[in-house]
Length: 218
Length: 375
Image 1 (cartoon, rainbow over the protein chains, first blue to last red):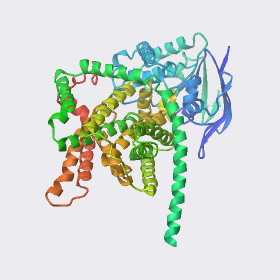
Image 2: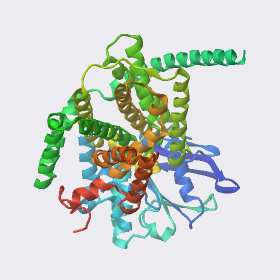
Image 3: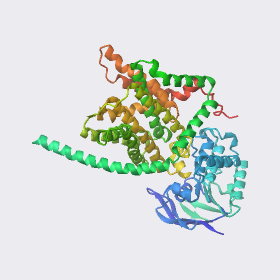
Image 4: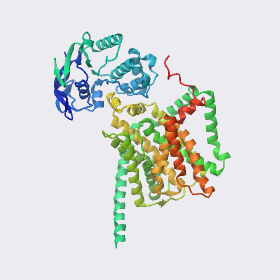
């Protein structure tokens, strides 16, 4: 197994609030890891710190054998760390197709190729019917799928999904589960996702870690 | 004695400014290299853009819209033949504002960088353009061309500043307004300067600015559908999400402002020729920046034809309002600006997306959108 992501003693505080406290974990390619915990325990901060939105106060983040601590978000994305947002952040004024195309531009320099790649992913994720709509007009489940589409369009090796299953129906959850399974099958890609309730992902993930007030408890 | 001291200090300052200008020129060459790198194959793209625009015209416009557009274009092309001197002069000013608003729209509309100080780039365009005219020979065409990369470099720098973390839209607007003021004061040190009259009648100016508007339209269409334009829109919508999708937000913002500023430079040189000299208070004026912004916003931010429509509505009314009180023997300074401001507020309240999208649909120029609703 190849180790994809290693966090060593990562801490992050906002003012006096300790969002992450000496978090260490590792993730292999081909693995789906869930981080569970109720709202406000630092799950989003964990995703933000790995994806470069926040620089950790201390500790080290290694991705694919390379120190990526404090990378800017776009650089983190360029080296292969794709992340989704919770709540979703669609580009409200852009069509679904354009929003995914922007992400696809990272790997495809030319507009035509980027658009083709975006359409492929839109098709695969079942968004074809709404591809011309402004993203602001989408329903919550569609927004979750759009987040996923944008992450996949950047061609990531590490997929960070913040609450990808929240407010989704059982069949949507199952479809996302199948998609992620297919994604990690060849062992090149790893997935880290966050959930409020560990029961939601019991059949889907390989491992579940629980976050409690910034500290990992297993 | 004191007076002489002041004069001496002003002279010293002038030397500093001149050195700064020299440095800016070197930066401009660097910017030119970067711009050339960025727009390699620009002629190809412009041709492709013209073709795309014609395709849009043939497919995405109703027959009524096509008829009206051809009528307007034919009218504009033959205007000097059938219109009188006052109408020609008004239309020249109108097209000038259309061009400036199109240039502003690239940063303000596409990339969401609401600048309150685009007059800075007008002033730079005018001063660099005329500086070349005065000091390095009499070719009036060389100056504006050299002014383009200078303004572009300054614009890129401002855009880079603007993407520092924590600089919000409002703060960016303030920074640009302050920079334009700084430019005005720097230019005031040099003082106003008369320019030798450029040969050619009003018709030459008219056709020149018409060509500039058409070129700016094509360029806007090219940028709108390019990868760069796509990234600008994403940054405008949500910079955090754009960064997470791999967009370099700093580079996107800097490039939008650089291109927008570079396009403003020829407009500045044009204005200086039209006014027959360099007048800092007019070139760098906040009023000018505001008018350009208002025209783009009234027409529709981020739309292709909005800035042109805005200029066609606002400028003739404005010209009328500034001559009307004089004819009635009343001095009413500020009436024009008051009316533009009132119109802007009205449009922002009633049609926040601008008049173009609304009007085009209302008059049946484009088919009513089917994409807005679900099947």
